[in-house]
Length: 324
Ligand code: PMV
Image 1: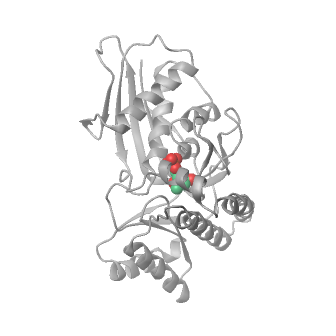
Image 2: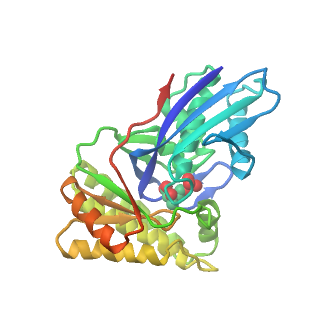
Image 3: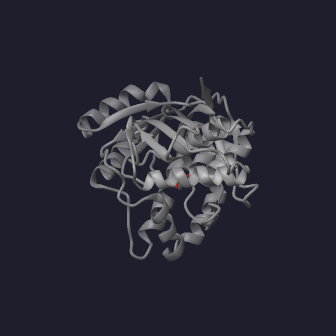
């Protein structure tokens, strides 16, 4: 009773920011993302009566922290929902090819891979949509990592709020450059950051409305293969999400000095005729959206502007995969 799954992380172009139901992780707004080839998690789940306890290994080390609790709770939820409570103890072994918790949402690939491997190890065969519903109970952004290319996560109820594919093999020439200026664990987890914002930010209702409009525009941009529109809408949507945090009580932000330097650099590149846009999640690291012809110029500019930054390049990645 053992299975291994690989899930790629995704970057939200229309962000999920806030839950209307915290137990079931139901979002106030639908979100849309690009699955990335360069960042992924491989997870093996094994159930065996030979195991005396449950164990979680991350990147080769046995861990026992809040993440271990989240992993164990998640397996327990899956066992309960799928009527598998009499299964023996388990071991989860995960390798993260994502800089953990540095704003690159390793939880998206992590909970997608964990869900798929656990269900397979139970000997069950669920659709990607059913897996996405289960993955949601671990982490909202994981709903989208079951799918490749462009994916969406719809708001709804426990059964309907799932991920779906918009286009698993997009034609668009679209690349992402992750500018890592700070590799440390994020200071404010997305979970508490978004909840604080829902409860206190005067901008929250406006955010929900805007995210709906932006989703329509983004869907249109994808259908029209319009990179410029996609980039503009993604950047503006990210800034609106971060604006809700600035208006929370107490106010907070994920921006750091280097985040602002990187944002200005993108603006300068645009002023020089190089088309690129940025987005960022619950962390300080900027992600630049651009097209093939501009990659070298952007890298060269950032090597001058932020010489200490690590730049990782990505494009579209696939949906969930099972490894033997
Ligand atoms: O799924 P979580 O709890 O890691 O939250 C993700 C939140 C953002 O990354 C900021 C936005 C998103 O839609 O991925």
